[in-house]
Length: 194
Image (cartoon, rainbow, N blue to C red):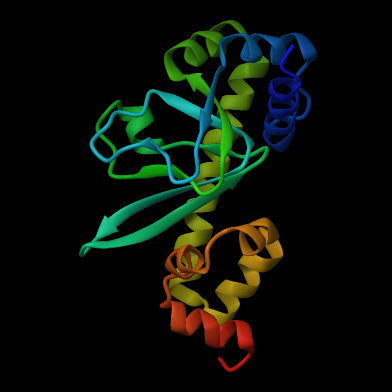
């Protein structure tokens, strides 16, 4: 038995809809596909249609895109987190986002079509799906507001407070990119100069 699978499902479900019964969690477990990734291995590529929602069981992933030939980090995911290319998954159109493993990782792929079938037969799974979408929208809004209204130091402090794992584990260049600052600015923020 894959104990990491059960732990991952429980952590992921508990983060969005903790009231889901063990029977409904088992329905989700039964359709997940385990995938092991090496460090720097790409899970989704630009131009690909994303047909799965990803539960991170072990390791750290990042979503990123290219703008003006620069790599920009959009999101970090680690144990118990959900990774989704929302627009591509919902519209079944090619994505601009890519996802790569920052560490050796184990992820579980939740086929979107099978997941939608489960939402039709289970109110609890439908609620879990709704909570995934709501959380994604809220995170996007918080990030947009942070870019618009917060200083570099405030953005760094917020990341340190809300996601200390990212600060501990992600390369500084990716953290700087995520916070929309240069590595030099991040260095000044971290040293208290800025």
